[in-house]
Length: 164
Image 1 (cartoon, rainbow, N blue to C red):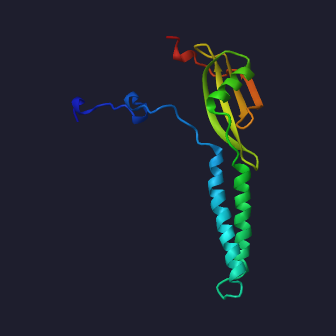
Image 2: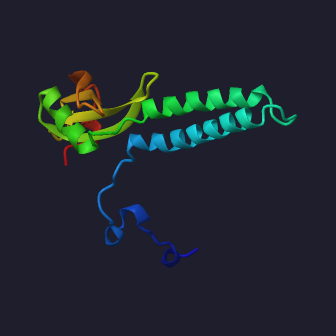
């Protein structure tokens, strides 16, 4: 293969001409959609069990399935709380919590507890060419409350990279 045949291609997600706008993180309230489906299936199972209880094709398993589906539906409704704090709001809250000027930062959505409460995990570095400090802040995705934070001197050694 000659050098003329080797070409670099910009990955599609980095192609500016195809930019469609900022990324919107999916809302946690989408969990209510399967909850409605589970509840509908539970209702159908209950009606079939009640109407055709004397049929040889219907037994107590329909009622058991209805109860299990209703429990899953309830869990989906409880866990499907609306995400009110987006990543940019969480970043502003985290910057206020760490107490140093921030350069680079990264946001990740996670869920905590049995009720799957949405939580932003924000990793922040101070605003120097070789950051002196870093912080990790957990921000509640519903209330915007700072759940926990850790600020420490940056242990990474970037001296080998030079200061170009």
